Length: 389
Image (cartoon, rainbow, N blue to C red; front, side):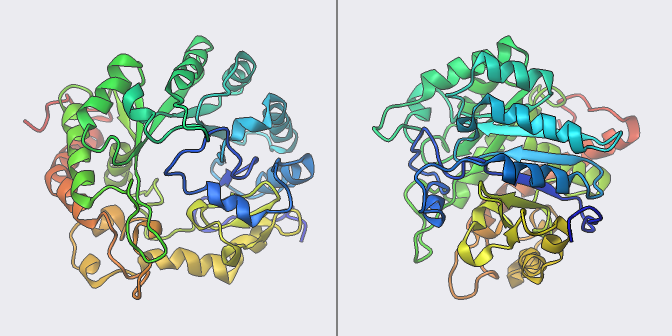
């Protein structure tokens, strides 16, 4: 098969592409992806060539998708240089059929953002996610160079470049031991100090080989309280003004019945990861030798999507713990991300490490989200922020 007649799966497929693999100009203490370089030990520098990039774009754009979603991550994807991303859009223009909707999103630490990058991203409507964990004293705890030097100042310089060229951007905050007690402070910093209206908060959950949490991993209760602080700030005057990805996803589910976050979905077959070499994996948290599905230079998307190992991986999400089956919040998390289930004897039926935190958050907020969703359905607009009072 050459990919020319490939059909999509029953659910839309997105791509998460690692053009520079795990290579990065930072050495963040909590980064789970740095160790993935061990999968490709034959070279110290990993860079995707056109012989890999072109079949990724060509074959994907020949599947049937409601929208074609390209996510560019790392490591640090901007190590590829701006000419790589110019090549990306040239190939997309070359292979896209008329009327195809294509989106590109880049997740970066911000250090390499330049006017050349910003001009291209602005003109081609890229969404740029910039990783920032809070004010300088917080951000620099874990987000450092190999020598331990903080990166906050350079991140802000990159952010200014995005603003200067009006590149659409958002902030991604990894919630770790460094900032989990500062929900309101972090929210205010993004909104008021940096003027960022689109927020994404990701819990830092990492385990050692015995399933024990690593030092920067947050507790369930910390996660629940952090989310509640963010929620309270959002409800106090920012509903419809500030976008919090988790909150948007909950409302999308309530209004349309669609899961837009893989962590909420009952199935993990929502996207695929493509490494710099063209190797394809089911999830960036599971880029492991035994999970390799194939290589895009040799396989079509139809072959990869249909692989039993990919289908079986997706089904792991719904192998719930008995407590999940009895939980009223199951539709909102479906057992949470597989990576958050400690790999102990009963994996994947382990309860999510964050289970009690999710319950704490949902128990207080779901009634409010339901009222907001009802208002949206009735009026097709966001309600006043204090609808819950």
